[in-house]
Length: 237
Length: 77
Image 1: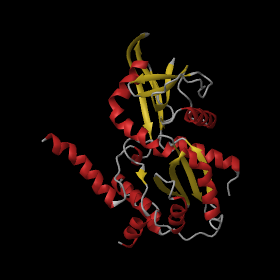
Image 2: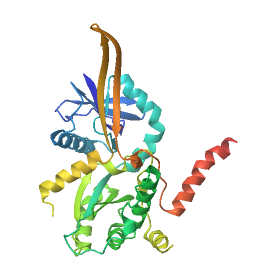
Image 3: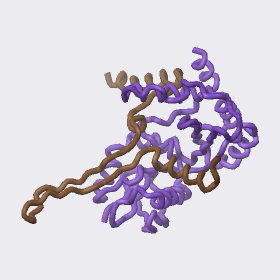
Image 4: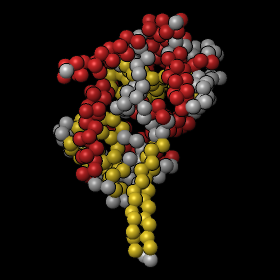
């Protein structure tokens, strides 16, 4: 038997009655104020669409009953409870602020698809252009994300949904622009209505609410909401 | 154009795989049916920018973060 880690959560006050990806009962391993939610499996999960879907659904169910959770990477397994506790204790200082940031918040994903509707052209600096080395790639990617924030549909989106956005991320792959917003859980329906009504020409695809997959990185890949005024300065600078 | 079914698969792939996956495996080296070495391997596959710290794109927030990082060191001195 191995322990498959689903998520790091603020320690729940009541037991969980939730099934995992193979319908195993999920249990909580406590390490002070944070806990790991694990399922006992005979072998590690396979990287197959069925397993990914089941894992995603399990995280969704978990997200419905705990106020704050950080999804673990798919396939994270441990041999014993002691290993899980050691990890949680070692990294509790970095997990706690991220748990506080995602507490009672959800992720909404907005995608702008090429070919759906005429959209403003993406500047070449809005895509990753330099892959000559690892450092160059990371710099190019960070620069592209900053430039994407100044792309007209993204700026309009931030104006429309600004009141709910607590953190945001931008990404472009093969011409598809994805925007991830962390918003209060209670505002998901209002957010969707506002975005769909506010960007009728761009016809973005709005999905969610999801657990905060894009904002669960303790190392800080997720960023606080970036004011539109700063984007304009950077864009012209 | 993506249908609902494709879109939901895209979200799953995006949400679950975007931050990387962990592949685990065991290796046992044995000689004459006697296990000599056992190694458990965990391989993390993900984009480098998912495991390396990144700075905030807003210059004001960046300055604030740097000040916050310096503050505990100054207090300790």
